[in-house]
Image 1 (cartoon, rainbow, N blue to C red):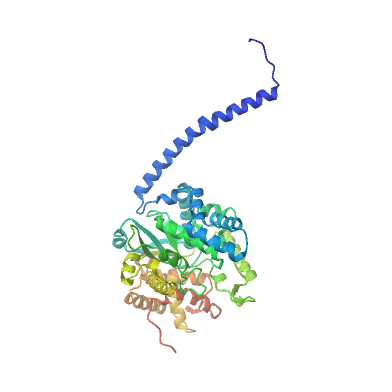
Image 2: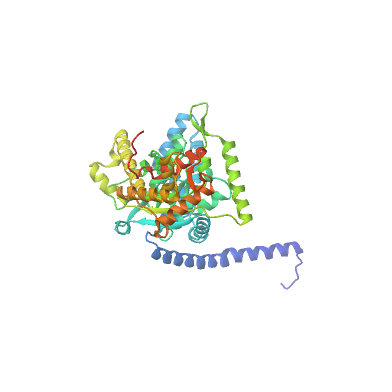
Length: 477
């Protein structure tokens, strides 16, 4: 019984490693996980008390659980069955496609990534590039939103900076979940975007199975109270003006809405404007058509324009001559309740015929775009650009320019526009706008008189278009 047993060294080391692994896996790791989970839950509770709109449980649910709910949703299963029959493929192949679509769409929200890393990054980027301002906010209406409700921020799409800017300014209110295009599906950007609660969308996909998976995720998120941010235009404005709304995501929200349910859907219009849009030159490039007659951007000129922009600004930074790109402002308007709207319709959207529902959703989308347009901020550069466009080839002194901008502000105010005047000083606003246009060589100074550069009329119109709908119509010449 007391005999010595000799064991090889490798076996002793292996046994020791297994014992250490068992200790970590069965005792230490669960204990640490329990402590960390308690701290995370406590931090989330403190965060929810600070936020105006709480983080809903669905947003904090494990990604694998949400994906399983999405994959085995009855409507998704039905769509997979129809896809398998139509494409003459095994059902397992259709379900594998569903799995890949669910993995692509489902976010992986991380509160730390959003409120610590994401907020710090968005704040630094936004404030480094622009003088960021929160303009008009209908605080009373926002405070009167009846809970529980799913809040959907609908906004115009001026720049890819919109995601950063609005997330930063809304961070004190809530955590936003964006629908992000395929452009962001690159490593490691996609991991960070997914961790902030965003979900990816194939905007031009006509695949019925994919559209059904996306629809059911949007319905799941909306029914779960997840606060979302949507760009009804579906893409960036090419000419600076508001675009016609796309019905996709809004239709997904409406068609699954229960007017008698516990949770209302409240749309909050958000207006965004910039003194300089970073991608303006790229967006204004001529568009060609492909073999199917669809609009297609010229990639080479776009890439060259982007490279020139980056190199020029790096050169200015190296010489100490770089300045921020003017003002960026965001306004929040009056919320619109879907429950009240369906009461006006007098019909449950879930029971509407497809043609009738599309007509109703189209009316809703136009109403939302109108509400967004009403709260788009009027900034110095669009004001000065409008004056130069109206002046044509006429030369203006600085005094004449300021007088015309003051008259234009009066016109905009009479139409109910929200004007942001830096430092509450109209003269300073004109100086800021004029300086920006001079630096970009859109305006030429000759013998003390200013005029628009002939080759920059399209660029001036791009900025003037952002506020054109807020001004009285000009008589045709």
